[in-house]
Length: 176
Image (cartoon, rainbow, N blue to C red):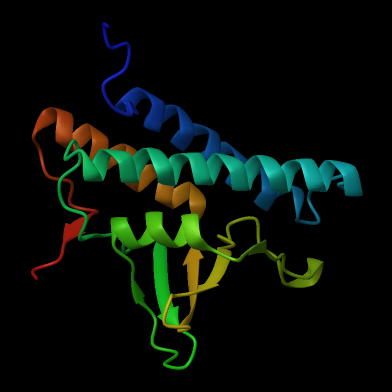
């Protein structure tokens, strides 16, 4: 019998597609939540938007993790200093998250939320983080703050670096 498939395939163009969707969705949710937007989200549209953002982010995390395990992306310890920060709830010491931590936490999160500033406190320039929370197997509660549009940009830069062989100054590997 001939084999049709050999392994999961998530090529860089698929990751780029998911990054671009996440980037646009994050900017849209930030824009729609300010007083500058004349249109207000209805409850059904808000539910659809939440489903679209969370499912696209999950697909991106799975595609990245697949490439990490298949060694197409080397360096699961790459710090995403601009876009992702993790802290354990009892420690309250926030630190940049690694690419693998971001993937794992997105996949294993229990909650997914994005708040908005009250109208008088918002600025069109503000970056509003999406917050995901969960609990590790040893019951250690954690919180990760993601600026999804910056996360998408970091990943797109990483993919370009891998293909051109040039290191990106915005993303650093840990020294461990």
